Length: 505
Ligand code: ME8
Image 1 (cartoon, rainbow, N blue to C red):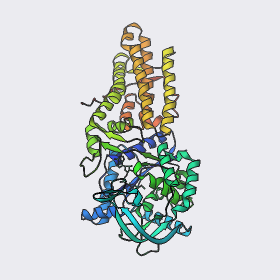
Image 2 (image 1 turned 90 degrees about the horizontal axis):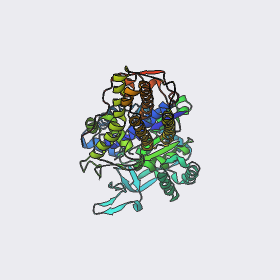
Image 3 (image 1 turned 90 degrees about the vertical axis):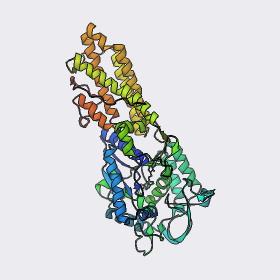
Image 4 (image 1 turned 60 degrees about the vertical axis):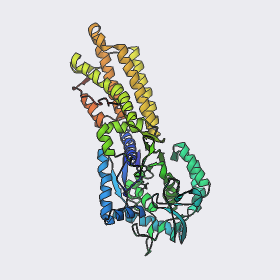
């Protein structure tokens, strides 16, 4: 199987914040999970560098636009390893490969009679880089605002249009046949009712500024930033060369986006693709929105969460874990310091870290740093092993359907069972009464801890590398396919270092 997963490409008008980090980490988790299953995986991210918003930001920073985007794009690129993410490509829309691809797509649409020249007159929001109908706007004392709260301007200019209206029925037909394409389900319903409400042709070029991909054979028009931006996903697969191995293997792909930009991905993008004779995306997952201590995150409120600061304070895996354990993927979430501390202490420090720490220290002290496979298991042991198999089934089902929080809950519910088992078997008492049974219990708990660690790997990879090194193991030799039967004759242990120190409230 092959698996192509993408983040949105982020605007370079500002520095990255926790919202951008969230989407990138989500894709990293899914990409690592896919690799763990043995699938051939391609994880793409990058930056969206054209359009009026970016041009304006360069101007207000008194920078040459190209210099400005070079500098700002680098901030997004530098953040990736800091987030513990491993990508396969980073795309920038100002790269030559992308301009060629976007212009080819344009020509393809033009040749397929999907584009015509006319005039646009209506509302435009530079902050959202989106056109709005007056009926979508709200009137405030500062004038009309977009549903996102962004200000809008009345624009009137010559523009090329994409015949979006023509694709209304085809999109409805496609989605009704493939309802799993848009997830979660509530978002699917939202998109479908938007399409059924009627689609108008879409303005896809601008003439009032210059910072964009030039429309082929036109002096004054640059492409509307969204047609250029969406095309990044296929540029990275070597479009326009659709017969190359990469394209054939990885398209159609899976887009993970914030709910704010679902319409672009689930309405415009599939229509562009179909109109250009290409397959629509395999899946689009729209996640929710993070707030900070109950408030919308915004520059004007001064409550932007800097990913560097938060990771510095709490630790990388602690933050990765919190973001995906605390809030169902797809729902909105609130970032609160107390919630991070409570979650990390309860799950990572107590339930998981403490189990590893006390069992491995005990083995080092009382079992010569080694455990060996028991000759037979008791009924209570078999039950615990069977319960792991059930956990694995739920985990796989949930991870495969983007329910990362549920998959984590499966693991932590199981860890609680293992902790109950340890307390009931009490190896520290068996030490004096039945040394062999003590060793058997220690082996089983060690084996299950290793298996649990592998399931946790996509979410907290660097901590799992450390955890596995206690057992002289490496994730590179353990995949979800070969670890089902994993039960080595003996396991040698190294002295553990605490993985998750408790966070003070
Ligand atoms: O929209 N909570 O770029 P962008 C959760 N360039 N996610 C958030 C967030 C928050 N508070 N804030 C941002 C663009 N995000 C276009 C995309 S794709 C072809 C072009 C995340 O820099 C979320 O994924 O405004 C959202 O969709 C994205 O950042 C918007 O990034």
